[in-house]
Image 1: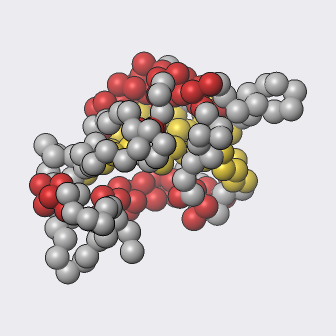
Image 2 (image 1 turned 180 degrees about the vertical axis):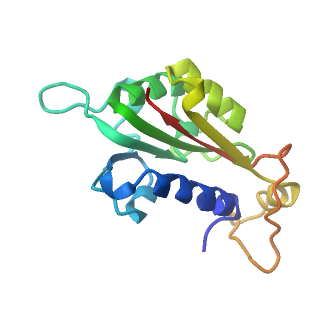
Length: 186
């Protein structure tokens, strides 16, 4: 059963990825395993902190940055010490016309795994992506949340599991729980 924090995000994000034609894409995922649910042409995982994207792009044996059609960073950017540097490194790993999908929490409890450093709204993610070198005209960003979901985030055990019978998925744009974006390299 999914966390209430991810239900709306997953519905929208799955469609965004499906619209890219996943079976044609060479994909890297930084931590997480969300990308494993798609039928990508190729799919590789790079686990943080063993592979620290803040240190530089992932490289081939010849030292050149690995190139991908899509890089996924799902619920990991909040754990990075230098997310701006990491986002610039992702840009270096994308083929021309490639995409970066990023999803992060905004209003959820501290969760140091191994550390917890940052939070973003949809506008904040857009700004992060622009500052890293993505063109503003090629960024889609969204967010979801409401006060009832925020209250559920105070419960233990955490994260709260979605209960279709009782959880309200109505979005309150002024109370984001999570945010996500898809940016295209020009």
